[in-house]
Length: 442
Image 1 (cartoon, rainbow, N blue to C red):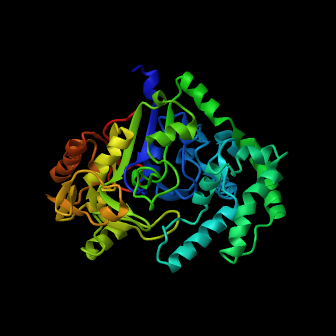
Image 2 (tube, helix red, strand yellow):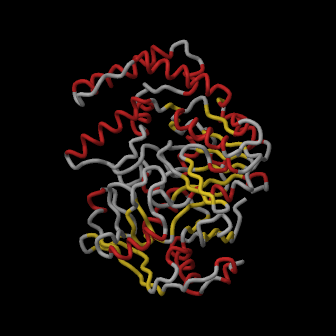
Image 3 (cartoon, rainbow, N blue to C red):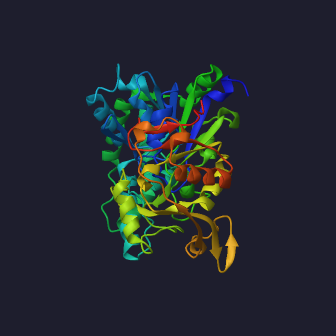
């Protein structure tokens, strides 16, 4: 592999999301020329702490905080223009941009648009499902309904908001079925076509300076040897095909999603870094083998409080459990991980004993991979290895891996041996500076 081919790194979540991708993207953006978001929508929330100041971004790549970087929102993203302009306005007020926001951020003309009726439908479904105690636990941001319209060929793309010749006709077709559903099933007011049409026209006028052929932009950058960082959202176990279905998101969160979500070939990515915490969390419904909310609520609360484990998008408290190496190895296999970024190790500082799951037991039989059925995954019993915890330490004195407490080094090496992938980055505190870079993938 030439140096030119080593310049392209993808970041994927290796658990159920909320792993700390924002911090890693922020750090690796220093080495990149372009940062591209390839799937999901504003159901993702990347929380960054830089110099003690917290910034939360839901749609725009977190690399935007670095001057001189180009941030791309690719075709695989479902794009909410309302949220987009809320974020650009906040960034402008924070004086993040050297010139204009549209000089730094480009949006794919092929990305599908989240419209107000998508959000309404998402909310109505969750409310209806909650009455039957069958809700999925979505963020109610309209993500799923927007992806549904995309697949059913009733979606509205960003380009439709710019070239509006057939926009009203497309909207009418997209709305027709939904109004039937709204009126006759949910007993909800119908969607106003005219109001939606004028909303789209307004958004299109504002969006025009941002819209680009992102695929071609990436292709030219790759040909020119530019350094590209592909930024994923959510996590492997929420992948629509390979996650804990139906408690999943509506897109492919694994490395394959980067290729289709940007329109690039497999050789466009040279390194794939999986982000995982030193423990595990999950938001919303669904199976979670190593969860300790009931078995050890005191430890769960301690981890949640120290780790600030509340959703950046929803504010919901995250469910907490021990690190699951079975699930992490599964993530490694699905995306061909070449490195692990281990986050929030500091949250476990000072614990006497730490548990780590190395296999499952299902109906008395050993399992080394997650079962496909969510109902079976609910029944698995995690098999733990107990490790000695590590003492609290001064993160300012950590300059290399050898400076870490021996117990933490043992913890890291167990992970590396089990999944056969090196830990290339270790987060030992919430701030950007509290990060130990063992190897830069660029």
